[in-house]
Amino acid sequence: MEWTFFLLAGLIVLAGMVVLPIFFGAPWHPLMPYTISRILKFVDIRPGETICDLGCGEGRVLITAAKEYSAKGVGVEIDPIKVGLARLLAKLKKVDSKVSIIRGNIFDFDPSDADVVYLYLTHQALDKLFPEILKKLKPTVRIISYRFCIRGMTPEKVSADKTLFLYQLTKGTEINNYT
Ligand SMILES: C[S@@+](CC[C@H](N)C(=O)[O-])C[C@H]1O[C@@H](n2cnc3c(N)ncnc32)[C@H](O)[C@@H]1O
Image (cartoon, rainbow, N blue to C red; front, side, top):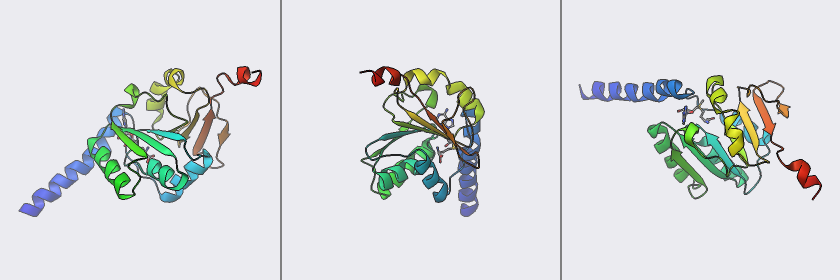
């Protein structure tokens, strides 16, 4: 009797984690370690840079960026269970001083500290974020989107399998060339 209760409760929590985010912007789909490495190499993350993951799930992209590339990670996630999981994983991997996970909505988040913005969201969510978010980003930010291109923007680089799209903002670089 007791175990059926826990099984049922577990299934409801799992269903909530997978299904509910669909209504906010994107479902959850944990990535393979190989894919996380590909993403971070493709965007050429460097030590000391801040990478923001909008809709960070369990935060493994940020944790890997901190652990293997000495980057700082900031993640925003709407689902409190994934927020807790991401914080726990960051602690277990001993990068909790470099990775902060914010519980919130990507549409209210201020990404102005980001050197790199990483996105794995649906086209609907990306359409809602862009181009509005561009005003809030650093002039030199690099944006990497996994699986979904950002409609209306031209990527700097696309992976051969068309799953990684890299965008480079160049606001102000012309002026910098003359100063
Ligand atoms: C496809 S998963 C990507 C997770 C992580 N970025 C990764 O690549 O492993 C999308 C995540 O975005 C979260 N999400 C969806 N809409 C959101 C919103 N409006 N605000 C914050 N998080 C959101 C979901 O809960 C889910 O964890």
